[in-house]
Length: 160
Length: 151
Image (tube, rainbow over all chains, first blue to last red; front, side):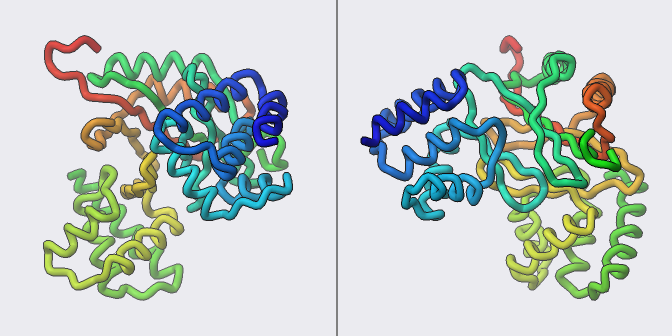
C-alpha cells in the first residue's frame, strides 16, 4: 500500500520534484536508513511543494492526508535529509526555519519575503544568476551554491 | 574595525533599546559592546558567548542568546542561519551600508564581500517583478581556491 501511495504522490509532483523524491528515497536507503512511514511521508509532501515550507506546515499537510506522523518525527526526518544534502533550510528571519527540496540537477529558485503580507514568493531571474556567476568568478572561491533572499513589498500588496 | 560604524551603531542601539523600554542590564550592555567592537561581520552566537566569558562576563549562555534575539527583533542586527542551524549575527549599519558573505564549506569561515554589479542586478530583478525592495541577503557557498588550483 505504501509503495502504491508513493507512486500516486510522485505522479502529483512536477517531473523535477518526482525525480527528487525517487533520488531522495535512494539516498536515504544507501545511507542505511529504512524507508519508514515518517520518512516516506515527509519526502512525498516535500516533493509536492513549489516553495519552502516550515516543519509545522509539512506536518499539517501530512496529517491532512490522514497519516499519523508526529511533529518530532518530521523534524528528525528533516535533519536527516539536511545531513544528506537532500533539502535546504531557509531562514526568512521569522525565527522559523523553512525547508525545500534540493533538486539533484541543481535547478533552484530564490525567495522574496513580503514584509507586509508575510508571503514567501519563489522567483527565478537569469540576469541575477549571471551576476552571481560573475561575482563567483572574481571571488577566489569555487562557488557551489548560493542563497538569495529579497525583502520588500510584493506587487499584490496594496502598499507595494 | 570601522570606528565610525561602531560609534553610530552604538548610539542607535542604546537609543532603540531605551525606546523599547528595556533596561541597560549587564548582559544586554556586554553583548551590545562586544557586537560594536567585533560584530561588523557575522559572529556565531556561541563565539559571542565564548568571547564574553573570556573577558570575565558572568552572563549565562541563555541570557546572551535572548539578548541577541531581542536585538534582532529591534532591527539592530542581521541574523544568518546556516544549513547546520547555526545562527550568526552582525550589526546592521544605521546608514544602510551592507555586505554579503562567502561561506567556506570546508572550514565554516565567513568572509564579507561587496559587489556593485551584483547590487545592480538585485535591484533590476526586483524592479522587473514590481517589488518595492527594502533589503536583501546573498550568501555564496563553496571552497576557497588554494594557490595553483583551478577556479
